[in-house]
Image (tube, rainbow, N blue to C red; front, side):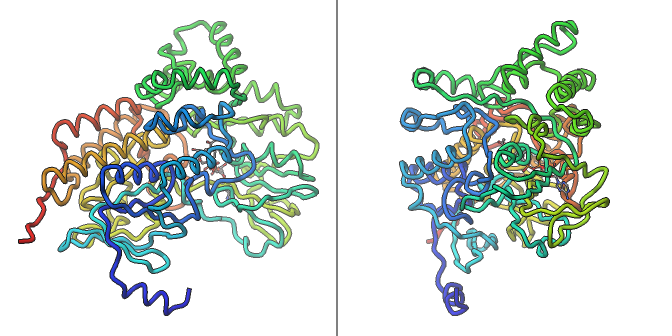
Length: 548
Ligand code: N01
């Protein structure tokens, strides 16, 4: 872009719509659709080149959702449910992206969006009661309502190992994977990071590369996904029973139809629970995750299950030293996001795959020819950084947002994110968040949460229009009360016992805290519906100013 073009854009009158939706992931797409259905003018902005959100960016080999495809899909349209057929129980990233594209085509969503448009500076103009926005390309827009559907995991963590620019080979990041095919054959590959992304990447890359070195710092607990093809018969049965499945899912803790138990671990004998765990392990993670009710509240029960999984690592991995290093210790199972894998532990039995323990030998630099640890230089042709995200708050804080009285979001969230129901804030009128911090967020089925949040937001906007109201925001008291509720529930769980991206521990200098509502999606839905039914209790509105 020439500077003249940028200057011209800055002097042009900004385009004005009723609402701006930031993000073309599942939350943003549904927000655009619902607002348009209600007759509002909507502009969608998306930094990527097309729809899909996380699935647009995370195209790494082996990418697959750890929520079943039947749950990880929209429920708002029966027609779409009937027209789309999933091919596997856990869909691959490419199939989910194809689904996002199918929905975008079906509902003509792209016509509302500007792609390759990254929102950069956003400010509330109090005199005019309007949000003003400028993109990284200098385009300017205005709207009454601003809907942040920026996602919890859309900002990759910066590479914190020095020397990346000096590497002469190929360097990829799992969260910003290129759109072209990457050929690993005959190449020495180094994979840094063993969270959900790294654990999915390793087995696939190991199939074709010359050698794979997996750089592991904190070992993750991972469970066998046991993904299966969905037969035509089963797909037909699912479609025939979709409304019932959706009703069940809506009333669960996670928003999915997976099995859940009310049985505390120590309520059954050691022999019986071993049989239960063995059976569930063989059936797959979906069953294993729902075995006992108290794993996140009872440390002793948690340790029994953690030990079972460690025992499985011993059974699968041939080399006892490697098996020992792969075993997670020092934090409760499920306090970090449990990973679901396909042959991850088995991958370490391949002669060309090795594990580098970054606790014993931390990586000190990326060099011209590979990675250097405190003990040696490992020469590589390809480095894959699967090192995670500045999660939950990072994507919104990456935008320069200024609310009422010139208050910056970065100041309002200096000690951690503050919000009411994860939907509204105080001091940021008409700014709505979809899937935001302090909500069920990453503990829930995200698409169910997106739909729930969008419906609440759109209903609130319609309420305002009916009542002649100009702005809505949360009261400071409601924000404080909600923060306390979220904190009290978190403190009763083991989530707070691990250093994870859940708590901000993966980003240096980030305020620590578990800013996720751990009371269940079903409970959260009740609370949000109750607030709306009580006339938006905890919210303050201003009336529309007369123009006469
Ligand atoms: O990121 P992570 P992710 N040197 O933060 C390591 C979702 N997701 O992209 O823990 C060496 O979990 C870091 O080590 P440590 C899902 O919610 C879902 O894998 O900091 N290592 C860790 O091992 C998931 O939880 C799906 O000690 C370094 C890893 O990098 C979330 O995204 C698939 C390092 C980062 O793991 C994030 O997963 C993928 C360094 N300097 C993602 N810096 C599915 O649906 C970081 N690490 C299946």
